Length: 327
Image (cartoon, rainbow, N blue to C red):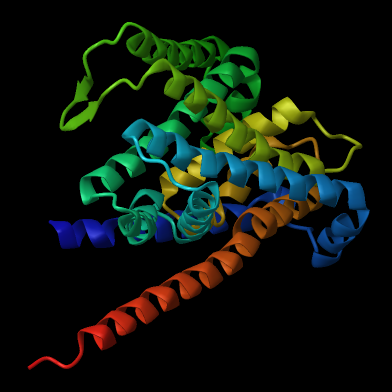
């Protein structure tokens, strides 16, 4: 069963990539799109736009580091900001590109946090806590989007699947998402018993931790969406809230697809949510997002992993020399 599961998600991710590229290639709005048009779209982005997109990237990754710090505070561990930031940066840079972020991120965190005295059980809780912080932020921001701007989600669903959903139903879903967030806050305030769903058990953290979760989760999404927003042209730009809604839907779809880096899935859903903008300009903004949020961090993360493992190997060799030859 474990072997089957190990192969299942990569196959699901591959299928999602193939299907997304097929839908993109057969999209009539992209038939006449040329590389020259995309290149021209890059040139039309101002230096200030590139600068703001880079700043938004830093905000997103700072929020991701905050995930780990909040989780460690919940577990009662105090580590340096620098160490936490490096671990978090490496974890998310690798997992965002590899796919199956919960599993790939767990390996990186185990290698790092085990050197600081955290047990396997604590690292498992930390991974689950960080994932829940992201989910909480998605529920909060997604709920607000569905309540105040359900039309964008309706357009995305119809564009990708041709399923037409009423705005009233979408608004009801958004209200349910916000209600879950409110219940989570109430559970912390009134110290309710842990929430049990099957084998999963969620113990409500103290309210200070919950409030930090509710700040960190949305902050990461706001920063990541900001990368695309600042890379889009001013003329015809639908506004930050619409871009945020489109990003939330496309990024969630990319994560759920388990496609490495969400390749194809992110582009497909986001393009369907932006029919009012020229496809070349939208694709240019998405490429900038991939470079700043995925590719550049991946390059740095690989360097961090190499240096970390090199240091671990040097320590092991030094300890072996100190012990001397076995009798």
